[in-house]
Image 1 (tube, rainbow, N blue to C red):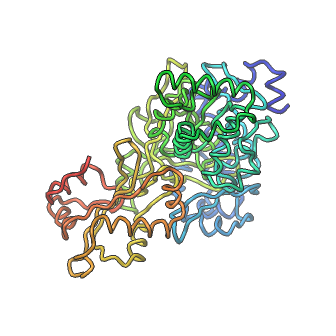
Image 2 (spheres, rainbow, N blue to C red):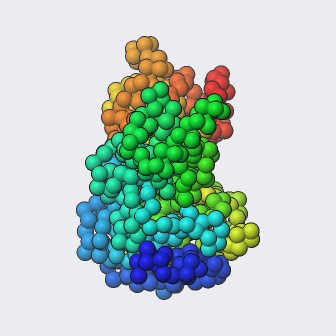
Image 3 (cartoon, one colour):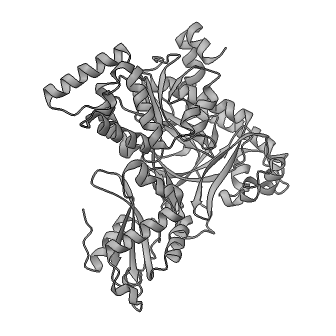
Length: 538
């Protein structure tokens, strides 16, 4: 039966057990599933050229052997095979290839293969997440066939494009706008079109990238409260129900002298966010829509990896998407300072609550990645949740690793990319540092601290504002994803601060500490500014 047929003909408890039963696992049962699926993946890897590259003729016979023998990997270890899509070297035949950002600029894309078994797992987990998004407690959910979904997802070949593709034959959902039409529109056009369609007939679900949902919500607020009330001009196209809601909401807001918000017009069954900055936008989205968004964890390489539950207070990782390992924060930092250092990893049953870890995955069901450093940092919130009767650890997404700056989930900025932008700009920049920082509303931006070369004539005429304008233009030129930030979200994701020449070198000499050029700790940056007589702007 399809998922929709099950909703009509199967007891809710049985549906819940099939798609969300992993939440009832003990930690021991969870680990048994992890280890069994990992050994299956090892056997698949042993029969392909990619696996032989890492096994070197010695196939691991246990989980411990696998972790001792196979080194931690990054995308560069797979690039020659995956960028050329050499399917004959992989452990399973890809059905689809998905794309994501690598470093921007010269090497903008990474490709990840998905086998049929991986897609089946992805589909089952995303349907489980759909149940949880509409749930108010264990086993209590409200998923309705024909539900209207405001569409704010990047299309294929990006990972979020899999959602409508995979569930199309499982349940009938009405995307606003349709998937076919959305593919022809920009994100901004897509959001405005979807909202106008929702104003005509209502909507039940909102699913998309958290930063895009935030940008969409701002656009909806502006549209709903504009003087011409563009969203209300087509009264004749509205269903009677939406016409009544709009009239009632408009009257109430005029009476109370309050702005019209999306929650005044729509009563969502579920609200799902994906993306790296979900925590930054969650409170504003909750206030605007009257429902707290549920977060999903995942990405192009790991697929749909984890979900929050009905309590929306922490992620639980699906046991059948990836085999998970975790690098403690101090080990991670040491390995970033010394690339030859191999950090120690821990399994999910060896974690400490409250600690931050870099995630390492082995993709199951014929995936290509083994002991792969995704570049994401999670905090283990708790080892179990007695209130929700969960015997499994729960996590929250913290950020990318310190040497990668992720802004709103759109772009990944590295030392290499910033140095390239400096080179092509021909500006007389000497030493520099870059960090991810947050404005007064809690939203992230890229902050570059730089010194100008003292022997350059340009240094005499370049102001901080002029430098910022130059760098912003060159970043947009070099990295298309960066250019989307201002256009979609209405934010300027860059700030430049000029430092006196020699400041960084003097700081490192006096403190005996070499700073990360990208991702230096805020404490170090504040200390640096104090040393040269500058105060950080609040």
